Image (tube, helix red, strand yellow):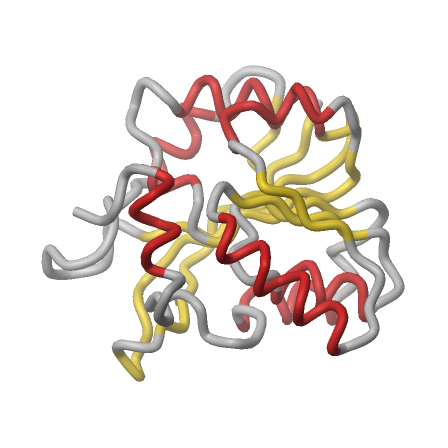
Length: 197
């Protein structure tokens, strides 16, 4: 199993965590290039900010949040170095409603799969509070198709559909890959597109 506590995630950023590839995940880059990432963008669990920076580079109003201060510091440095206007916040993703803001697109690259069963409803309720009606939640999560036991919890399509059964429309769940630093072949993932009712 992977890290559970904020301190554990933060400690991983003293080095380079396997998911911190220094560029956007190809699945999200393809969505951006297709125009599927639009409006005000929030990246929940943004890490060192590559998806926020990608959105800002497209001219979008982009915000990233992560509970790991070291990751947010790195994201802010990248934004300065690239001369991009962004907002990065140290924030608990289980407290999204407290942001008091609304977004058109929410990106999630590897956050959903870290939540325990009891935390998933809180997370989804928070998403409901920050995603405008008609807005989209785009999620890349570790898949139950991934063999072995290393890495985070595997997620099934049924778990995704059950989590977003109330107040959401699951538009698609497609096989995808996570690029990671520890395996050139990447890790098997699900890419889900979910619309807020």
